[in-house]
Length: 323
Image (tube, rainbow, N blue to C red; front, side, top):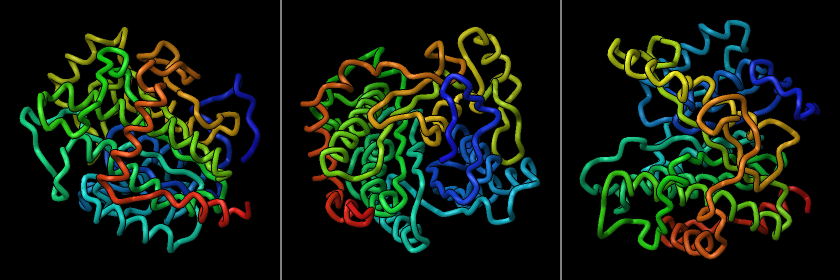
C-alpha cells in the first residue's frame, strides 16, 4: 500500500486504493454503506454484501450517484446473510473465484436483538450467529484469498464490552437470555476472536493481519439522508441531535473501521476507535480487559469451530502466500 504517516491521516482523503479489492458485510446501510462508499471513493473495488438484494441495489445506486467518477463496476453486490452458514459458504466461494482479496470488513450485525431468544436455520442463537459465528466462518473461508495478497481482516467491536463485561461461558445463551446480554456477549466474542485470530495467524506464518475497530456512538439521526440508505424520521433526528455532544454520524463512525482496514501503519492485534471513544477522528485504543483474556478467546474459538464446522486453513493460507 501507499505509505501514509499515521499523524497525518485524513479520513476524508484516503490513500489511492486502485487495484485493491475489499469485501464489506452489511453494506446496504449504516456503517457498512459509508465504509463501502469511502473505499470506492479511494479507487477500490468493493464487494457490497447483505441479505436483501433490493436494498443492496439501492445502496450501490447511491454510491454511483455520490461517487460519479468511480468505475462502473467499482461496487459489486453479493447476497450474503451472516446468520446463515450456507449463505456464507456460497458467497465466499463466489469471491474466491475472482482471485485475491486485500481486505475483509466484518461489519454486519444485529444491533437491536429480539426480546426473546430466537434461533437461526442452523440452530444457533441469532445474535451470536449473525454478529460472531457468520464472520468467523467467512474469515476462515476467505483466508487463502486474503493471504494471496497479504491482506487484512477487521472485526467490529463495541463500547458495550467495557460497560458490562459478561464472561460468555454460554455464548449461545441457552439460559438467562436478555437482549442486552445477547448483544454484549456477541461483541465480546467478536473482539476476542479478532485478537485470537491475529495470534494464530502470526504463529502459523500467515501474512494476514487481524484488527478490531469500533465506531463509537454513531447514530442514524446524525447521519446524512441518502435515498435508499438512510432516511430517519424527524423525531429520530430530534432525539439524536439532543446527544450531539457525545454522538456522531455513521459516516464518521466508519472512519476507524476504514483506517483499520487500509492504513499501512496499522498492525495486527490492534484496537481502533474514535478519539474520545464515543466520537472523533480514529486512533489506537485499549480494548476491554475481558476481550484481551487469552483463555476466554481460546474457549470462544473452540465454540466457533464446533458451531460452524469451519477450521481455518492456516497451512494452506501460508502456502498460498509462498511462506
